[in-house]
Length: 120
Image 1: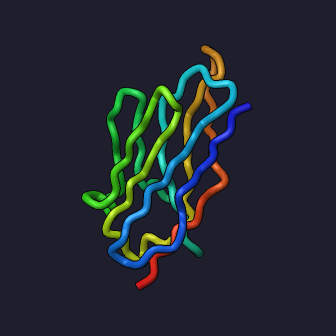
Image 2: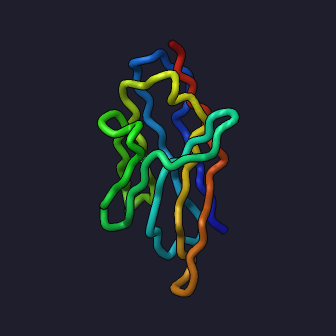
């Protein structure tokens, strides 16, 4: 079984910074993708940023220049450094990963979510 555990959410004032961390554990053969999604009340879950095993990244236009995703392949961890936070960044942030537990199949996993609240 695989688990994703997030940490680092909280309450911050507009303009502040937070760093989210996500650790993958369990039966892991390889991880092809790790990323962060967010869901605000009344809105659909959206991709914030993702990073592939080779290091290539993508991110939502709304966070470009403010958020940076990084990954530690040796520790099976992904991080999201969030700077210049805005009230509209308020949401539950979910860690996501595509993981192979053996060579045959990959599965999509989600963390439990961590709340990020940005006050104006």
